Amino acid sequence: MQRRLVTIPALFGAAVLLTLLIPLWLPLALVADALRARFRFPVARLLAFGVCWSWLETAGVLAAAALWVTGQRGNQRRHYALQRWWASKLLASLGATCGIRIETEQVDMFTPGPTVLFVRHASLADSLVSAYVITKLARLQPHYVLKRELLIDPCLDVVGQRVPNYFLDRGANDSAPELAAVERLAGGLGADDVGIIFPEGTRANPRKREAAMAKIVERDPARAARLSGLQHLLPPRPSGAAAMMRGAPAADLVLAWHVGFEGLDTFGGVLKALSRPFKPIRFVARRVPRAEIPSGDAFPEWLDKQWVQMDNEVGVALAARNERTH
Image (tube, rainbow, N blue to C red; front, side):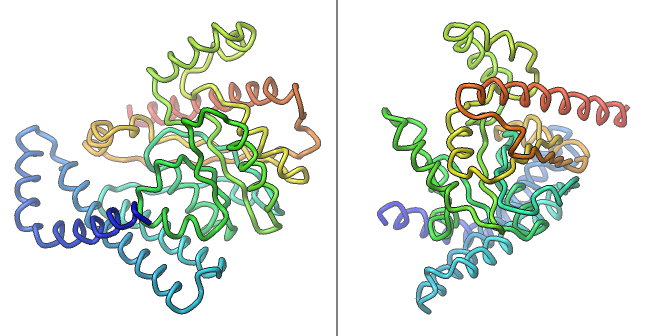
């Protein structure tokens, strides 16, 4: 509650200020972009999306408040409908302001359910993209494992805690309670549900990949050899992924990757990406029957092999995108 007393008024204030100050920030942003010869005007585009984001977040919080006032706080169907609206409108705003759109393949892989989704983590928008694919396109209900830091987002804080999600404490001294909570979350999956986790644990970039591999070399040289060829993904963290699978023993697994968000893990990377024409984001999914997934000690090695395969697929897809550019 104390966090919301800060974040929700700050959200409302940001929405009002960004709107009222459009006559000030828009010409300044256009001039700043032009002086840097960035004629796709990335700063202006990003600020325009900021206006859309702040008002969509505000609308989401107000809708959640209305559900609470009318005694619908526990109505998960209505909250999932709100999440579906929020995700689709945010992506539409990204398209209108920044030229970002999504192309999806194999969305039917998520049915019949329940399923568990392991998805690549490359950018600030990965949770939004997966929410759009699951709620809008597949018309299913996501059960997310997310980092606790995301609770600073008012919509995620309010709505995200009224539907089955778990906000993981990545800095916990004892990981056992966190893993148990992930397992319980997966245990609640029904036929219309998808459990979602990002096994890499954080957004991938070369610096993080090098640091992660250095730790693995010290602890497990055999695993380091298996993963030594990774060029685009981070090594997966098997504990959380295994907990999801233990919690949902009847669920098939969907492995998903996307290309087009590379470099969008920082503010500077976003501005650089928006400075050039933005190709559609490609989202690809592959379903693995439960009978093909080992459990226990064999699972981490199996997951590593899947991640190496995914890394190779991402590399091929990126090479194809680059060829089309030239």
